[in-house]
Length: 509
Ligand SMILES: Nc1ncnc2c1ncn2[C@@H]1O[C@H](COP(=O)(O)OP(=O)(O)OP(=O)(O)O)[C@@H](O)[C@H]1O
Ligand SMILES: [Mg+2]
Image (cartoon, rainbow, N blue to C red):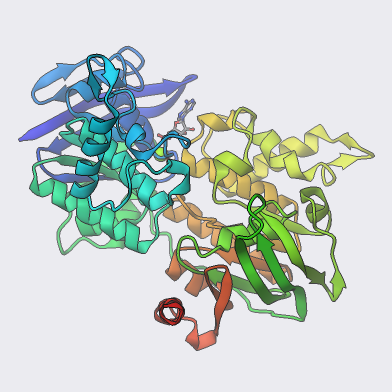
C-alpha cells in the first residue's frame, strides 16, 4: 500500500521551475531513495512534503495515509509522523544532546521542564539507536557522526512514521555511514518508512527498495532496486547520458619539490597544552596531487586550516618553503598573496557569504585578478562568473542569484570556482566533492588535473578513499595529528591506507 503519493507537484522560485509536475509514490515500510544531480529538486520536493513550503506555495497534491494534506508548516507534518532531517545539520551547538532531542517538544511536569525525565528519555532513545553518549554532553563537542545520530534521536522522539533523510551520510566516514544505514534497515523492520536522498549510489544500492530519479525538476522514473540494477544505469537516468570514465586521465608531469612543510606543530588556541598537529613534515612537487587520508578527527582539516593563515589553532613551530624559500603565511591574506588557497569542507562557516550573489562570491578572493589599478573591472567579473557557472554547471537563475537560494552541491561549486580562479600554486582541497553529484564530480576532477598539468601543487584531504586513490600521486596517512604513513604508486590502495591507520591505532594502546 502506498503511504505517500505526491501528485503533479509544481514549485517555482522567481518564475523558475524547480519542480515540474513531479510524481512520487512511496510504499509503506520501504526505503525509497531519491537521486538526481545537484539542483535537480530533491530537497525542494522534500520541503514541500514536510511543510517547509506551505500549502499554496506550490501546486499539486500530497496524499498521505490516504488523506489529502495541506500543511501550513513543519509542525503540521510532524503531527502526522513525517519527520525530515535536513541536508545541513540544525542542532543547537551549545545545548546538550538531550536538550536538542527534545527541543520544541520539551518533557514537562506541571508545565516545568523535567530535566530528569529529559535525560532518562534521551538515554532510552540513544540506546535504541546505539549512540553511546552521555545525554548531557554539549553537542558542539561531538563529531558529525554522533550529531547525525542525535538528529535521528530527535526524529524518533516525535513518533516518526515517515523519516526523510536528506544526504545523511555526506559528512560521515565509512563506519558511521555504515551504522546509519544499518539503523535504517532496523527501522524498516519496525515498520518505519524512509525516504533517503543521497549522492552515494553504492549506499543507495545497498539499502533502497526502490529508487526515484529526478532530473531538472522532473520525475524521470522509479526503478526497483534488484540485483540487475547497475550504478551506470542509475547515473544514466540522472544525467541523461553516459558520463564516460568517472576519473578522467591526467598527463603526469611531476617536477621538482615545490612546497615543503617542516616541523609543523599546532596547539589548541585556548588550551595551549593540547597538541593538535604533532610535528608534520611533508613535501609536494610541481604537478603533483598529494592526498591526506585519515579517520574523522585525525586532524586533517585542522592541519589544512593551520597552513592557510593559521586559521586554526596556534602554531608553535614550523615553516612552509616554496621553491626553497620560507613563506610568510601567518594571515589569510598573506597566504593568498603567497599562492595558497584552501577550499573548505564547511561552506557555511568558513567559505561563503550566503546572502551575497554567485558573482560576488566568485570574485571575492580575486580582486587583484579582475581589477586594474584597484578598480574592479565589472565586465571581467561578470564574464568570469558566467564562465564558471557554465563549466561547473552551477544551476541557478543567473549569476546574481544569492547563494542561500542554491542547492547544497551548487554552493560547493561556487566556492571551488573562487579558488580555482585565484590560480594558487598550492591548492588545499578539504573534502572537495562532498555533496556533489557524479557529473559535477567528474568536472571537478578534470579541473584538478588541469591545475596539476599546469605545474601547480595540490593537497587533497578526502574521506572518500576511492577518490584519493584514483586522483593522487601520493598519499600521506594521518592519525591523531601525526603523519603515520606515506604510500605511493602501486602501494597507494585503499586497503593499505586502512591498514596504516589501524596499525598506528594499535601501537598506541
Ligand atoms: N529558496 C530558493 N530560492 C530560489 N531558488 C531555489 C531555492 N531553493 C532551491 N532553489 C533552486 O531550486 C532548484 C532545486 O534545488 P534543490 O535544493 O531542491 O536541489 P537538490 O536536488 O536538493 O540539489 P543538491 O544535490 O545540490 O542538494 C535549484 O536550481 C535551486 O537553485
Ligand atoms: Mg539538496
